Image (cartoon, rainbow, N blue to C red; front, side, top):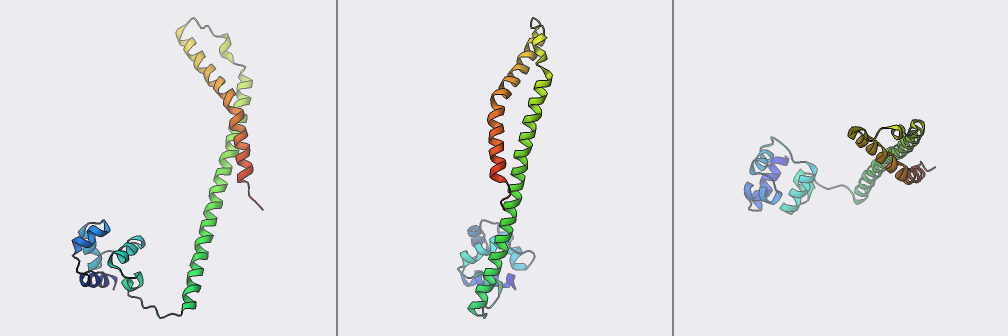
Length: 169
């Protein structure tokens, strides 16, 4: 039924398959497949087809809208309720993931501080007259220096993130 409707409405508007394909940003073969019933357009494409052919999607699908106005509003509100529930669940899942990331970041920072403390900077005893040892010592010192400067700021940011993303009751 959809395939016949697309074909008949396209022809009644005086459009060729190629012209409709250009308006929809698809290839002509796609229009041909729809009209032969070999495939169907997705929901976004149905909206685009209805806009370009200047007809409601319901007409394109062959539905007749005989239902009472009150029933339509009820159906729409139920669909919106489902969509809101899905968006809420997605938001909660994202919040949980971000919360876990902040907790993990705090744990990594604490473990790194403990690790650096336990190491007691062994590179201070190295012989820096040898090029390999000197480069390695400078690299290790750079990482430690950068960590000591950035860790407190990052840790405070992670704590604030944990507080902001906690589950609100």
